[in-house]
Length: 301
Image (cartoon, rainbow, N blue to C red):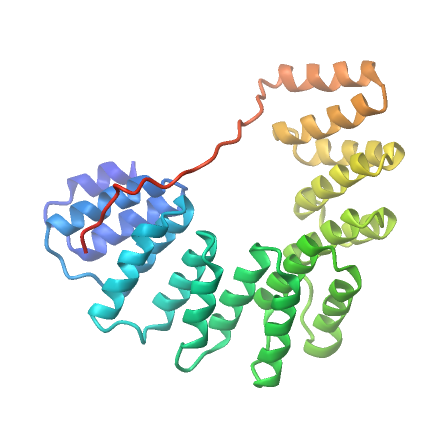
């Protein structure tokens, strides 16, 4: 519907084109956003920061490192390197494309770093599981008198979760309320549940899940259920599984998790029951996929 409305616009300006690009990126259709950008180039429109950020987000989704470098060169060619939002997006794009050193170099040379820039680079290290460096940046940020916010703590806790640093994560989690009076939200609890679950501290993780409103607890319950399976805690897994299926009865992944838990404990009648429930609801597992970058994609900026 959105594309149909866009197509009916007789005189499209840059705002129209960019809005359509943002829509594609938001819904995960990065390839369509890039195709649309090529049409913008044909129209010879002068690009602004919002258009470039949308393009970089599309590259980040697809892991298009070569194209990201082209945009990087263009940014410096048109003297937009002082735009923090663009540079932050470029940092994120490089990180998601696996070029963490490039991302760090951009951050280090950024003029007038503010909270969003710190959040961006901490998140970059977090997504690569480099918790030690993320914590160093977190402490450096505080030493430079930059006050962390909810996003900062989400990135740091996520990094701790990926690295399995339980005590460090607990310390950061407590400091949110004790030092900064920040009330933990769904994402913070989710990171802590994942961190404790991976470490086998399932009871503590379940106690944290109970702090969440029911409608916001499904991701944390999923992480806890997977950990119950890994740590062979079938009793807790059954309790968590029932609660998860009550909350997200249309989520095929939840049925798969519960089914696998029963299968590993040899409860084949329960396996058949869960699979029958999923089949009755017409649910199918979503297949995974991988992406590769093709060198012949060029934006000609």
